[in-house]
Image (tube, rainbow, N blue to C red; front, side, top):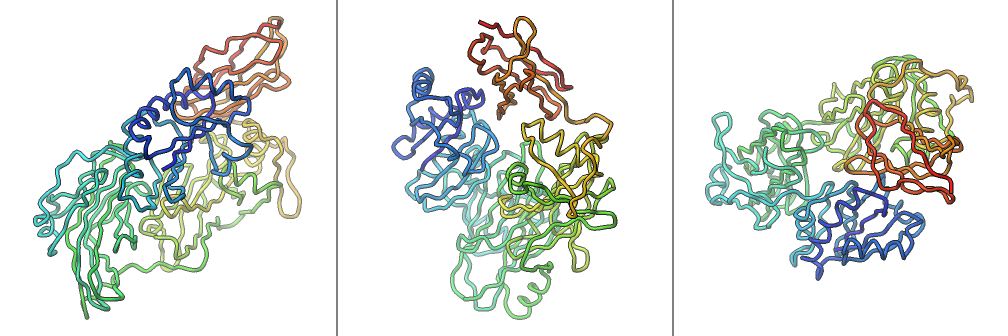
Length: 527
């Protein structure tokens, strides 16, 4: 296994996870390679050598080739890329993980002698199981099957018996206990040609984060997430013989989320019973493509001068002005989408909705809120369809009006250093750029870091680092000595990383900026 870590010497969160990474690496160094590549062009070999010595790192440390790290679509540092022994990228995780046990669990999952892979992860693994495995006969009796067994894999949690609605059921032991974990139960079955495997269950989970997956001989065939009262789902069987049904529950919610999963019965049905069970399965409109488009009166699509670059920055290249504070989206899905587990996401409310909840008749529709500078503080809202464990996505960006569209392209994006974007209608027309919303943002705050010399003159070219607990961004002061940025209203840590030649200044102190936004002035000495 290879852990590729993308970082920089100026990144505080990167530094916090190195001791944990080093401790776990020393346990697995004969089976794991760790390669830490700095993405900072000014981190020379000499600077990196000093850093390695100072932090007592024993894994490989080097410099990123130009643009290599961006092939992974990173949005911040540190970013860890897990590559299994077969050369398959199995996880890309952005954010610090300062827990030796988490790294040790991650290494153990991929370094075992029985690993075949690929084991695809969207989150770092959580804690190891802290629950005893139950008697297999008792689990089988609860499910009304001949046999059942929890896999003997160290990082997989067991399933246990429970009582729900007057039924003796099986439930994953990681429910309500810990995040980033998976519980599984294997059920060997003998099936006939044309029979079905029927699973009866009930669940209340967080959509997009926690899901129950049914696998046949290790291959996922169906998933479920969100709120679902007692239901029975039938899996058709093409060829008779011996198969293994695996019930797998993956949990990514925080410990505070009260999820529940109950499996009441697993049965092999034939004949009329099989036909009736298949007929009871939900039917969703499926075509060859996935789409998400706002519909209604007065909605106008707009074009952007560089849609591919904007797609890289925000994950979307379709933009609309809707002239309202709410919008209806019409969606279509392909066979790649599972409506019972994949979701519609509205970023203005932060809510995930199972795609199945948008079914009305033979169409899929969803309602979203349209933010604005004068209301929620953002000049835009974005809605997305997510599928395949959030790996696949398709989105649409909507603006309440032209003024908010201008605010996004000519204020919001430039605050992050992107000055060259512009928009227009398909016929080439567009309002004047000075048409902007009057109210100031709520929910985000304006921050200004200004650098001056001892005489009050602006100092351009200063590197300013802005961090929260998990990621860092880098800004450079402009000709006016200023770094301006709009960020969520929270405490941000401001750190001067490097001053231009001919100046001296404090590059050690970290200043906390107020969540309400403020201007911070740093004085450098001209030498």
